[in-house]
Length: 237
Image 1 (spheres, rainbow, N blue to C red):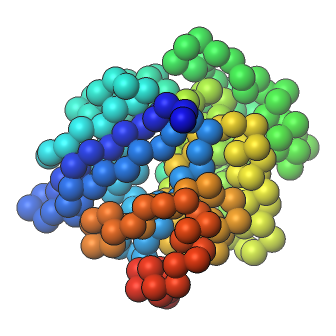
Image 2: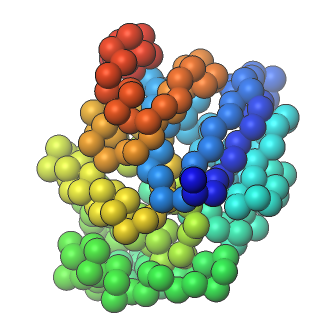
Image 3: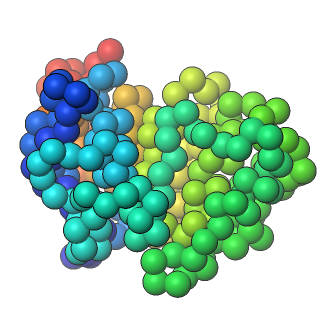
């Protein structure tokens, strides 16, 4: 069995005096694509922000490749090997597509450089003809592709994607799904927070379901497909 890239245990997270996460725990192993599923407001984005150090947990522990990262600053966590694509993408709108990619470039935690810009353009062929375009003039789908590509330029050990399909046209959602399946096929490790269960069923290897700030189910994706009760109770909109 492959080693865990990320291990989250007993996370409690608060916004002010309001508790959002209650003892959240999950793990993602090398080469897995894990879908963190739940309805809007279930705690998905807060879990991602807690892992990235943007919503520091009041209790619990996060290990990245065996090293405790909970309590560290986000930039230190990024250097340790986490790449985060937030829900609102946060591209640099006044810079070109290629400038955005170059800004994100760094070697991975072991010095690896598996995502040079030539490979980015091979995996994201949509971006190469747009490389001189100002990023703020891209469509929402193009910006989402750029945000993922820019994060990969940092050679992360684990890619965190927060709601990558939200607000996008179906054809763009399909393209992003194809990209994520490609990343899975080459052994990338990915954690996706999504409320769009159907988007994840065809590309994830594992699923964890969160509801009201608590993990209520974790299994392989085929087990989730077969479990009508869980899907109806926690994921039906």
